[in-house]
Structures are given as structure tokens and as C-alpha cells.
Amino acid sequence: MTSSSLAKPQLIERIKTKVRRFFGPWGVFFKGFVKHPVMVGSIIPSSSRTVKKMLAPVDWENCDLFVEYGPGVGTFCQPVLDRMKPGATLLVIDLNEDFIEYLQKTFRDSRFIAVHGSAADVNEIIVDAGFEQADYILSGLPFSTLPDNLGPKIASETAKAIRTGGAFLVYQFRARARDFMEPHFKKIDSGFEAWNILPCHLFWGWKD
Ligand SMILES: C[S@@+](CC[C@H](N)C(=O)[O-])C[C@H]1O[C@@H](n2cnc3c(N)ncnc32)[C@H](O)[C@@H]1O
Image 1 (cartoon, rainbow, N blue to C red):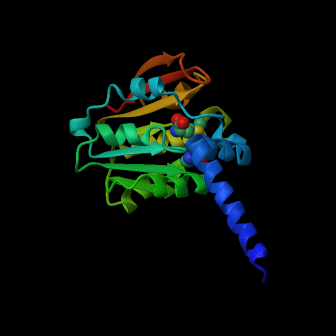
Image 2 (image 1 turned 180 degrees about the horizontal axis):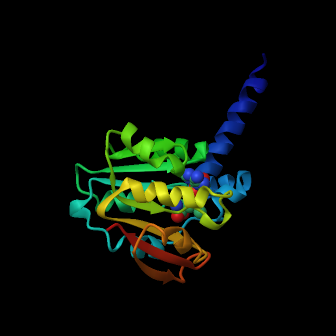
Image 3 (image 1 turned 30 degrees about the horizontal axis):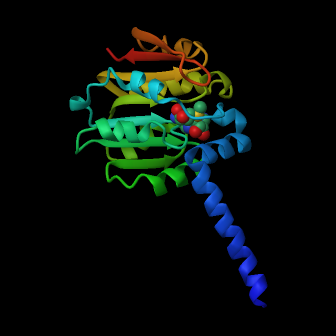
């Protein structure tokens, strides 16, 4: 093997690392969208205004387990970790293995667990992680483009997974997400954030 045939793959790897660093999480997210457009459902991550507004009603003092569906490249993860008390856990679940791998490399916090799986299996995943129920579940899932029956199934599994007094936090480009929540949550607060691509609807479903 010549020195030039050895140097070429190294050079390509170095260029790839530079490109990855330059584009950062947005690049990883965009790549995920190109690979699985329906599953990801958005070209760029949520805005910081959406994150702030969505998390505002959470009672962090009484939150031991915070679950997130569809974290993507972790737009909500650091803000959640920043607000969470020391002994609490953030458990994120995503169907896209590339995102989970990226999150495991990026978030080194001992309170962080990233699971490759479906939100439909949330109850099993929570038990496997050593918990009975979640205090809050946040969803960035593209509810309106999920395959048939998956939306209703995720909503009913979520209602079982949340403790009394906890909440299901949902943000979506379409208000249809509320239809999935309605059978399980009597009290649903709603909001809207225009500073997001695309502008999005926010819902907080409170568990009786
Ligand atoms: C619109 S992106 C949300 C990204 C991120 N939370 C944000 O706000 O920027 C939707 C995410 O849901 C994930 N996803 C889609 N279906 C899922 C399912 N059934 N269970 C878990 N994650 C899923 C996708 O892989 C993607 O990461």
C-alpha cells in the first residue's frame, strides 16, 4: 500500500469532521430529514422561543422523570437539563438511530438517558429504566404524518405513563395534535409560537 492511498481516506475523514463541526447539530438534523423526511417531519430544529415557552409551566421541583419523544439532535435536551434538579432524569426516545448515537456522544450528563425506540413503547421503556411513571412527557413527534393508528396509540400509552398531576407537552405545526390528546386529557392549555420554522401550536395536557 502506498502512502498516498493511506492518506486519501484520512483526508476524506478530516474533511468530513470539519464539515460536521461547521454545520453542527443543524447538519446532523438536516441529514436525518433527507434520510427519513416523514419520520423527522421538519427541516430545522425548534427555535429557542418555542423551547422556552413550552417548558415554562413545568414544576421542576416536583419532576423526577422527564421524558422526551423525538428529541432529534437535542434542541430541548440542554434546556431541560439546565432546569432539572440534580437527582432527576431526562429520558429521550427516538426512532432514528443516528440521532440517538449523536445525542449519546453529545450529552455527557449522568442524568441523561437516550433510548433508540418508539414512543409507542414508552411504558416498557420507562420500566426498563427503573421508573414507574413519568412526571412530564414532551413530544416533538410529527403527529399528523405518523403512520395510521400510531398517533392514537402513542397518546393512550402516554396518558398511562404520566403520573397524576403531571403533563403531556406537545408542539406541532398543525393543531391536529390536540385531537390525539383530547380523549385522554380533560384539561388542555394551548399556545402558539410564531418565531419558529414553521410557526407552531403548543399544547399542555394535564393528567387528572
Ligand atoms: C420534528 S422532529 C423534532 C426534533 C426536535 N425535538 C426539535 O424540536 O427540534 C421529530 C422527531 O421525532 C422522531 N420520531 C418520529 N417518529 C417517532 C416515534 N414513533 N417514536 C420516537 N421518535 C419518533 C424523529 O426521528 C425526529 O427526531
